[in-house]
Length: 355
Ligand SMILES: [Cu+2]
Image 1 (tube, rainbow, N blue to C red):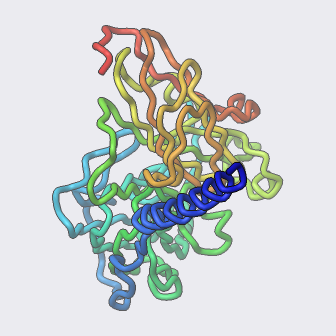
Image 2 (cartoon, protein in one colour; image 1 turned 180 degrees about the horizontal axis):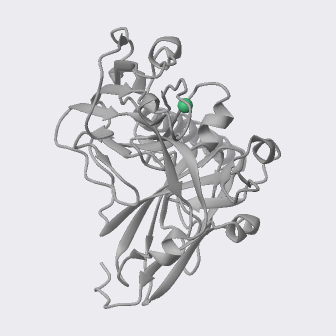
């Protein structure tokens, strides 16, 4: 009898295991189904021209300047222009340097679209407009959010040249774009970096009260005898930045805190541009309720204190402001905090009811 029971139990376990495996396989099938079926591969060859361009350095409703994240336009096709220029940029009260920029901004404009959208992109290398500031130079763009032939779409533009190409945002996420002209390190430390946000087709699974873009990047500068500052490849090669910035300046958001209220849910699109170091992103006084690595909600972690971002890596982090206060965000690699990688979220004002 005892033996019979044992056999029944073993049999039952085998049946349950097989049934469980079928259930899991079914779930797994839907959870990890073939995303690539709905993706768009291939696009028309890029077009080059030499027509003179005037007007603003960036154009398109899908673009905004960090920390602002404008909503993705309600369209499935986006006309986007981001031109390259050379200009002087202010680092802090005493330091300026001549950099190379996308859309005249450091970091370049945030491009915000939805998964499946088509981007019709146009870029002119306008470095020939400011010969007095800095010699013209070839430039290019590399969108990490795109899946295209780099040899065609990411080709180098001589000064004055324009490129047009299109790409489809296949994956939701937060992705870097940067100049890919050699030496890439040089073009990146000159300031040729920016962020693309691709929202999931059906939106995010959470609703937030505030959202901000935080773009971390390193500056490598040397002081000349004249007192001027210039970009410095020697310290870049040693990975020894003079400044580490959120949104283009060291300690920028200490001077200009991001606003929130106690009780609110805040979403940060955090990208570590590098180009040489990692970021250990942390907000003092709270835990991340959601972390979506690379900005894709399928790559989810919960209850996270610190998120590790490689060079060019990103995450969306969300948290609830637990009570009134001022919350500091940092790269928890504290040498980077000394160099400027810290900012504030000011939630000292009125509070709202927790949802
Ligand atoms: Cu460049």
